[in-house]
Image (cartoon, rainbow, N blue to C red; front, top):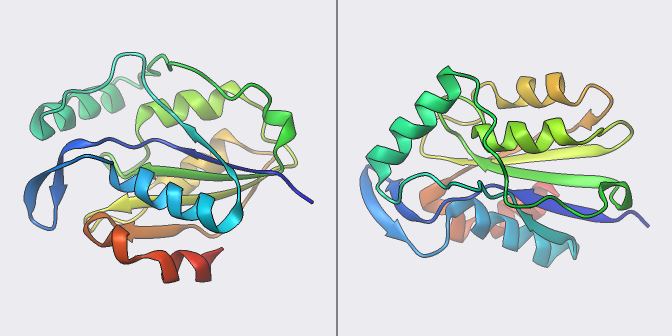
Length: 167
């Protein structure tokens, strides 16, 4: 039986939500990750920057854009202790400027994913995956990257059935 990890980057605080700004206690991607963990029994791992982006949405987007433009690799608070223990990695993130947050790049570059299956999922408000799938394939050349699931962030609380079908 394979062991599954649900590694996700998520941001609470002020978020863009269905055309407006809304303060979230739990980020959209974390909500999806928790649903996946409940269905699969996989272990959760929160990909967190050592120095998080601003709680203010507009400041956060400016910081994320600047990081993307300069190819930043933000330092992370922690990493999973033993990636060799996992066969399947559900990789979750919000779409930031057409791809994954740069902290997810940091995470992916830390490990060799050869022989592992990566199942990407993202939250967004209309932009889908952007370039993130091709970025994952480029960063993890030895992994099998399966079809991903893009979920509208404002609908994540009603996405359980969609997530079950995807899994």
